[in-house]
Image (cartoon, rainbow, N blue to C red; front, top):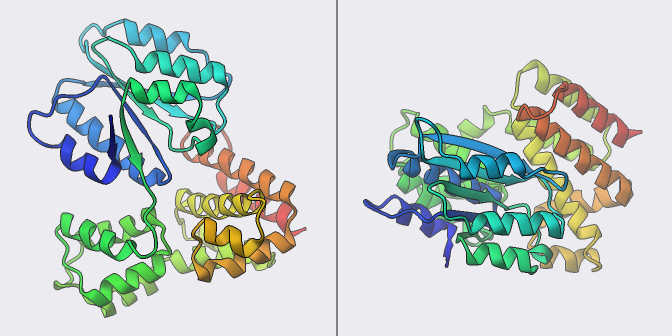
Amino acid sequence: MMIDSQAFNQQITQADTPLAKTYLFYGQTPFLSEENAQVLIEVAKKQGFNRREIFYIDNRFKFQPLLDSLNSPGLFDPKKILELRFDTDKPTKKIGEQVAKIAAHQSANLIIIQASGIGYRYQKEKWFTDTVKHSQAVVSKPIYANQLPTWIHQRATHLGIKLSADAVKWITRFSEGNLLWTNQILMQLTHSDYPQPISGEVIQEMLADMSVFQIEDLNQAILNKNKNALKIIEKLEQENESLVYITTVLYREFDTINQIIHSGQPFAQACRTLRIWQNKQRNYQAAINHYDPKKITDSLRQLALLDKINKGQHKGDGWLLLNRLASNLLV
């Protein structure tokens, strides 16, 4: 059974909703998939799932500790949440088959499979279709440019925020389809004392005070091979800006560029296929002109490592790695 991610939250939070044994979250919008999983976890805790274990699945993952935990009830907490997060977008058949078997478990535990990074090609493989068959599958579809204002309005209403049409327009304009950034803005508004409905002028003033412009400056400097990128990184570090957010923005940009390069299509056609915003295309074209495909791939690997450092999964100095990444690109 499949359900859209935007309908899932409302359905799962209804009173007395029975939980499935396995949930699979995947699709083109990781932010929505992660949010769905967090909502499910909160619901599960209320139903007695008091312990949570997280396993990161890559192509060298050893399943025995996971299987032992799945089949062994806790001494004080017999019901556990076991969360499987794919740490590779290209899982092997062997790894996939193991995940499919776990999805079909009959234990008292709750299995959550986070697979938003799995590409469409791998979703066609038998192990993935078997996983879907044994799970409550929740699919996160992309929010396209013409849908974003409605999404912002609905999200704001859910959070108890009243936005003027002009405010929605300004948030839409500056978000450029980044749902994570959009949600951060809306969450800030929930803790503000601005009179409602919040006007477009308030949003403009709020955005002017945020470091998002500096982060966007960094993004543009790197894509256009501008040596000011190193100075911007230094300033962002001095101001203790979110390295997590910087990593998210840069990974999204380089991943999009990588998709354009490997699409096998002319640039303009690839942008149409990938539904890339018009005002982003110039920077993407500049990056493709400046950097060969290997540098783009190497940058994605470094950003993935930086993400692990941010999450505490790998030791290292995140800011030092970001400086090294930028330096390698600018030489």
